Image (tube, rainbow over all chains, first blue to last red):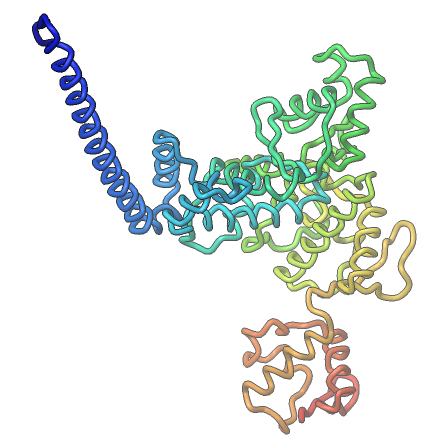
Length: 259
Length: 193
């Protein structure tokens, strides 16, 4: 600060100083904003360029895609939220345009496949299917050398289905994530049975009674409900009837190949 | 069900046939009580039976014999399909147009025998006509034996076809006016137009 003057002239001087400060501040602000604008447009064009030049990688390389998604998350951009966000704000189409639609298209196409798999298997699993199984099924129908996908991709794809209504959602039971294509809630007992079935692939009445300390009637009801919804299959060729989760078919096959 | 008796007709080991994953799912061998689940189960069995018969070139499936083969008996799991369930599945295939009982649908123990249409007679007729076309053998006379047993057809799917099924397929062509069968018994010949 300048030395405090005395006398009337000091008023003038302080007014001039503050005006100068103000104009200097304006200058700074405007240079900042222009440089920010340049930075943003550079960033925008770079991201666009990046998405365009790497569109193929984004589609074909799951690691690259995951990294790209992580990068977008780090800078506060959700490449999917843009187009699935309702209302069509400017920001919405902005990212969709910027990414050339390649990322969106990838997930939308994947979502179509997920819907197909869920529809095809609904009869055998009651509309409840493990994410891993969906992935394996989609991979098995792909061409040789087709783009690899991950479970993470599938979950994102399911997310894009949200605006279509609530019928597709994810559900975590135990440490397994399922995709549910029939809007139906599982009650806690049913979830417990499903979780128990993840261990060995199946449950029996006595397993539930011993491990969960349930009375027979309670175990019976939960199992019957799940069988009635096609979520469990019964195997009667054993000492005690076993109730299997159809998702376990995959693992059973892997064991068979290993054995 | 746990005793592993050596089956009477194990057949050659299916080196080329790989079972679908459902085959290793234990409940696959128990009839599912739930209607929609059972429907899904029937469809899976139907495609398995068709694929199995195609790989092993089985035209007619005798249920009582098949119950001990690896088609209906997964020895590794120690699970097998019961006669009643197998019959129900073949019946399902019949409604799908993928099987046809031979004679009266056998009841009780013997279970019956059925054609398994991994190709229907119409489809076989088409395949034969195509081969005749492709090899320019229209208006030539072939014996039925030549048609399915000669080396010329070794790479065709209808090679080694059951004579009875061949008759059915040729009848389709005769009806369409595309072939004429003459001769009798094992001396039959056919001419294609």
